Image 1 (cartoon, rainbow, N blue to C red):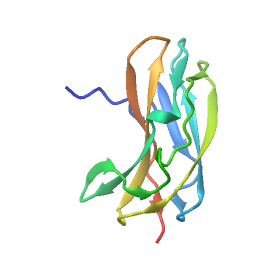
Image 2: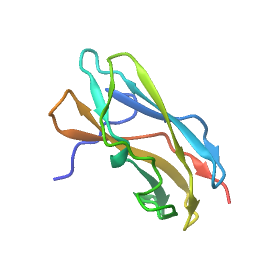
Image 3: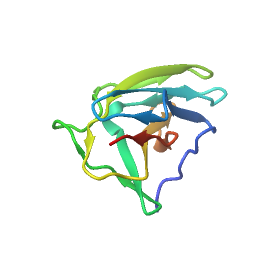
Image 4: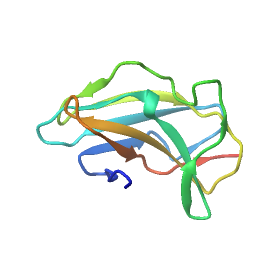
Length: 127
């Protein structure tokens, strides 16, 4: 059974700083905790870039160094209710030219609880 997806605008919000990027640029992304009274936690090790091809989202194949396109921290980053945190990742060269791209990560509501997926707005990667 797939995990329920936390949709943009509920509980947690993942947004990129722009709607279009060129290969080898950095993306600034912001995660906002809209959950009224609970800390959320995330770890960039669980983050990926997805591509949309023929209307279906899948993990994007990128030319990236070992470990994937996101810089990876081993610790959880906590976000207090009503606040945000900003991070950066590098856009590597897509193997395929997709219709759209988005970031996917996972957040944890409180410590020691299950993780739930969160996805960003969609964006373009120019040729």
